[in-house]
Length: 218
Image (cartoon, rainbow, N blue to C red; front, side, top):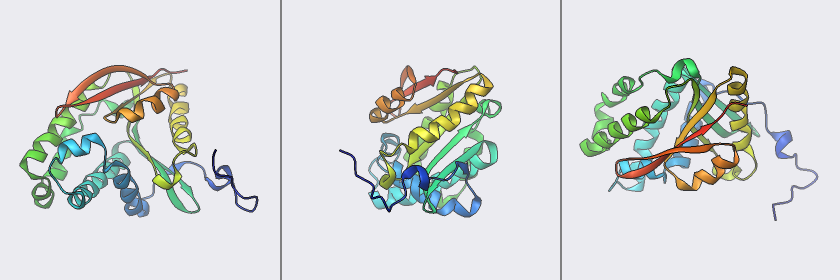
């Protein structure tokens, strides 16, 4: 049974503000939210194999900051709050930006001596390999691309992920195009299928599988 919300406590529906673009002053808490959510993701574990959890957190924060900044510059980063705290984040790219070759922009991060020292040469090779694999797997037809989506651990199972996904689906439906995403976590597949995605392909990167998922426009 779900937790009963006391009468004096506002419901999640009442607490959640409109989905809004992430502000630059919210970058630090956004990095923390995403880093905490993806620390155990198979893709991260494969890239940083043999790295301690404390090291993973440091490296992941730097990479997540890069992803969020890139999303703000070339795509969109939307967020929801509950009681003034970030509860969910989505980085995504509209059709005009999904064909952009994003690997070269990775060099702006990789040129950081500190980052290379943290990730190591083997980690660097695996990161580049993963980036290339993800790029090649994307469909050629126009689509909205969800690069990353997560809900704060304390807010899971409250429908926030569905609300964020529907926010993007509405935009894609109006544009008459589908939505594409991939996942390295098999546990995410049933959730995404309930949202309307279908598996279109299974591939491997760094010797671990990842799944391409497509949601047709409605």
